[in-house]
Image 1 (cartoon, helix red, strand yellow):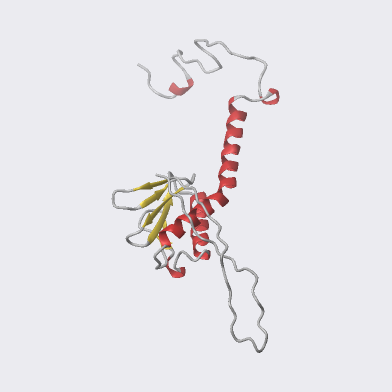
Image 2: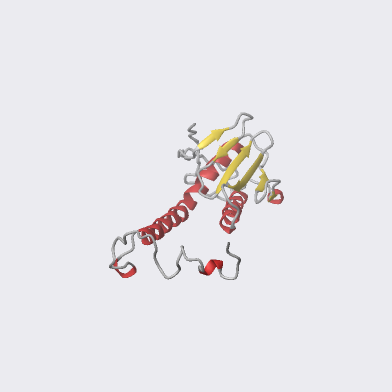
Length: 193
């Protein structure tokens, strides 16, 4: 389900500076900019909105309860708590969350907060989460790039970290530990029948 969010952004034009004898001042605002947010959004059966875009956390918006919950995708770590904390701090500074409502949730490692009371709070919350995801994109792609680089380094090393032996053929016995000996090192000190 794709959601486009349009919010009118209004900025004042030139204003007339009043003279001391001028008592009536008129300000006219007519500038409109369209703002779009992109999120991969799913809707649950009960109407909750689920955002699964982030690499470390999942975000649930509960419109009926005016709540937002973030929890770990796979495993709890410092990266997960850092992402949750950055999200809720961003939403708090944007004026979407109540200041005193951010707390740990009933799911292990989750954070939750209460949304401000407004008619358009869900749309604004989705827009702000979309903006936050854009700020998180360089961090997520950088971590993915680093993981790919380390995988390439381990799976296909360059000349400095590889041997000249090439493919080593399989043999029945290799190394100094004999497998088919009566007194093999792992049997030492035990009874053998």
